[in-house]
Length: 397
Image (cartoon, rainbow, N blue to C red; front, side, top):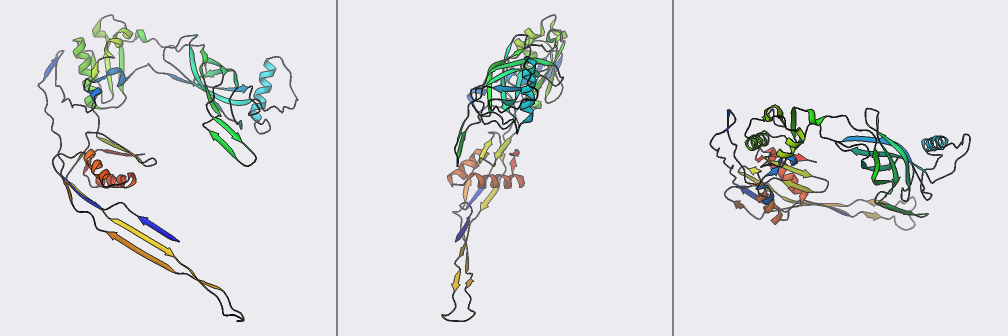
C-alpha cells in the first residue's frame, strides 16, 4: 500500500505593487454649507460607469416586509403522508379539523396516510392591502415522504404579534420526486417542501402611515462613509436644497420640512432613480468548501516575495510473512512489517518578476498560469495577509 502526500508546484514570485493615488476635486457649494466632492473611482464594469440607482443601494425606513407563519394540514396525498402513530400532532390536528366541520371522530382509530402536517411560511410585502394575494411555502414537519398532488387546507398565518394577517389554501406544487424499493431509494430535489403561488389572501393590513412622515431614514445596505456622502450630495444637488443629512456611514435622513407639502411617496419616487457611484472596501472572499475565490479590483499588494516548495512524501507498506519449517512443533506464522518512506523536494522554476502596480488579479493570474489549485491559492493569500502585504479585508466562509 502506497500513500502519497504532494503539495503544489514550486514557485517563487517577487511583487512590486503601488497604491493608487486620488486627487480631491475643488470644493463646491450645496445650500449654505461648503461641501467637498470626494474622488470618483472609475468602475471596471460598464454598468457602474454611470452609477447605481439609489433605490438599489438603500432601504427606506418602514418600507419592509413582515414574516408570517402558520400550522396546517395537506390532504389528498397518495399514501405519502404522515404515519399517524409516529406523528400524534397530525392526528390531533385532523381530529380538530373534522370536529370543526361537524364530524365527531372522538375515540376513532385513524389509519390514513394521505395527510401531512406542515408549517406554512410567507412574507407580507410592504403596503399590502386586504384582498391581495401573496406566495407561500409549505414544508412538512412529520415523516411524510412527499407533498406532490396534495392540497393545503385553510391555514391562518400570523405575525410575531400574534395577530392573523393572511389565510392560506390551495394546491401544493412540489418540485422534488422520490422513489424507493426494498433495497434502495432515490430522491431528486426536496419532495417534502413545496410552494403555492398566490396561495394566501391578506386579511389584515399593517397600520403604517407613510404619507404622514416628515423625516425619512435611508439605510445603506453596505455601510460606507464615502457612498453615504455621495448619496447625500446627489439628493441635495438634484433638489437644490439641503434635504438630505448624513448621520453616519450607514444612515442618512431626509428632512421633508424643507420641500413644502409634497407627498413623501412622491418625493421618494423622485430621488430613488438618482445615480451614485458607490465606493466599497477592498475585500477578498474565499469559500473553502467550493474552492471559490472572489476579489475586488481595488485590492492592492505591497512588494513581497512568496515561495512554496513541491514536497512529495511516499509511504509504502510491504509486509513479509514468515512461515515455520515443515514438521516444526510449536511453529507460528509471523507477519514482519516492512515500511519504506521516501521524501522528495523539487527545486522551483526560478524567479518571476512583475513590475509596476500589481493587483491581486495579477497574482491570481500568475498562480493560475503555474497550475496552483484553489486550496493552495487560499493558503497563499492567507499567508500574504498575515505578512501584512495584502491590503484588503480577508473573509473566509
